[in-house]
Image 1: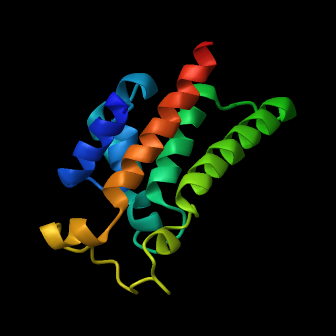
Image 2 (image 1 turned 135 degrees about the vertical axis):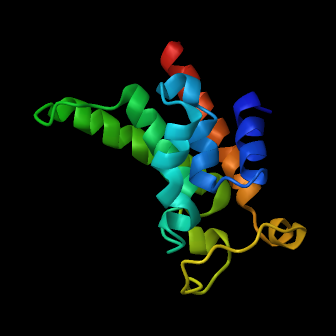
Image 3 (image 1 turned 90 degrees about the horizontal axis):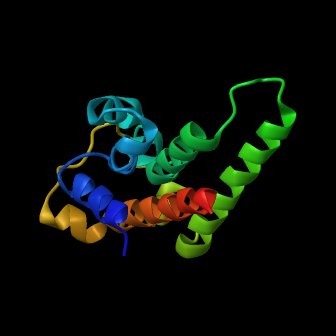
Amino acid sequence: MSARGDKAKQLFLSGYNCAQAVLMAFSDITGFDEKTSAMLASGFGGGMGRMREVCGTVSAMFMIVGIVNGYDDPKDNESKKRTYAMIQQLAGEFKEINGSIICKELLGLEKPEGTHIPEQRTAEYYKKRPCAELVKISAEITEKYLDSLKE
């Protein structure tokens, strides 16, 4: 159990997209207020604008750890390697738990729905989508990683 995982899940259940919910749960760590977090992550929901590519929760996870432990000098190859290794580690952990980091695969879709229009958030929507749990899992993986930096 994780307080951030629970917060991210609640944010998702309140209507934020998957990427927004994860990024917003770490606003105090990223330094972004919730509005900025929501705006920044708004296009990553539904596997990037409902294209069902990389899961929005995974994208948010990468944003958070990049803000906290990424690099900013384009010539610093050691930091680039460290950052890319960190991203691959986090993606691997998510994939190990869920089988994929690709939205359409996580949702069991053969192909994207072919529309940019989001579905209404109904009880039926939440029953057929694993997204609330994926949001929680990504937040928990992120929290665990950030805690490991303190050790």
